[in-house]
Length: 126
Image 1 (spheres, rainbow, N blue to C red):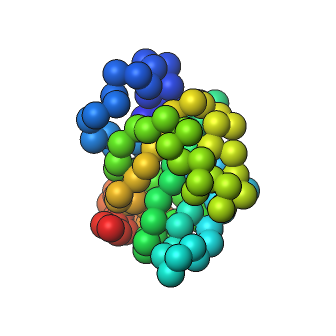
Image 2 (image 1 turned 30 degrees about the vertical axis):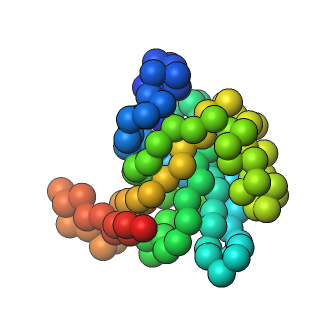
Image 3 (image 1 turned 90 degrees about the vertical axis):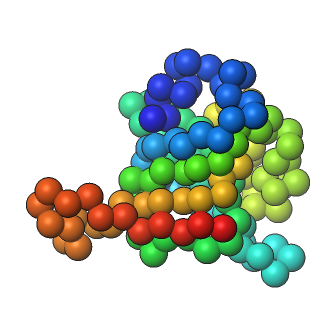
């Protein structure tokens, strides 16, 4: 969960693959085709804690503002994503000095597609 990650601290996760779960902050999605590849950045938030995520390639159909998302990837220093951040028009260090470089996004399907107790998900792997 985003809030757990932020409160525990980022430094200990450097080389490990992580899965960060939260909600896409409204208005935070920036997406462009750069060098023939779709790149995006967005902020995942939960309970006031936030982390910026960068990803490339396809995204789940249900990915949008307020979507419940799990981003799988690695924590990297925000300075490592400065080029992508500049190209997308976002500040990589706006929330933290660490960001998630995601290789996989999974978004919860809207409730009108789900059964009452079913957690259906759309998953895109890069």
